[in-house]
Length: 246
Image 1 (cartoon, rainbow, N blue to C red):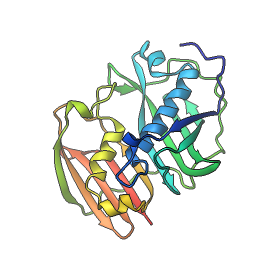
Image 2: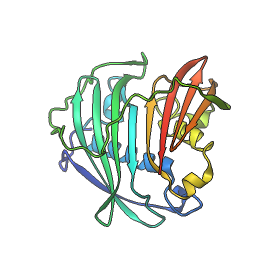
Image 3: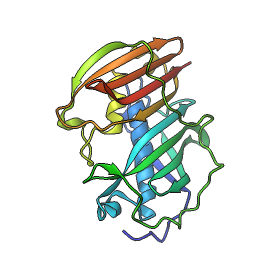
Image 4: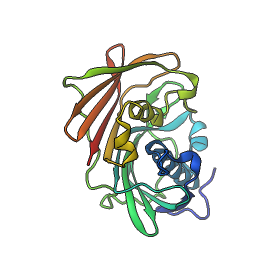
């Protein structure tokens, strides 16, 4: 698709929170929060001419590599949220994108995301084949208090769950969707932490692809106000999640 006439380097998009996106407490699920953020990023790439459809002409797609989310509070069923997004950096095969969620003018969520250009045939990273100079970059305009980091998952941990990857876990790029990793891990968390909105931030590292019928092990390490999950396949780590609680 060509660059849209209404393209801007900072996009604001409204979403209404519906009941299918909410937990039993009536507030937005953390997984659906990530979905809304990702859909907003996708909408910005569409009007900017670097969407999935644009990139598939060159067998390319954006894949999420790291993500940090900081939460003051979650929106509830019926809220209209405004998500703002802009790009901090974009060069060759990588991009850092910022996102914020607001309700009634109040910022309630900030997120920093790191994306890589991925060839869907070779399954390797490569330089973006499309022009992107029309995007103004905002390297100093941050959405989070802390940037994303490399999660330390190499300490003592316990096996929490074993799982096989099913078709419902895969996305359009034919690997496990980033939100699915989060969902698998949150299913193992004490429900009181989720229902009482005790998670103040979480960070995800996506390290290796997982595909249909892969057998994985979910590991857990719990310490005071912090839980780290890692997902391994054949002793190699595919994903890590760090939860920080209030």
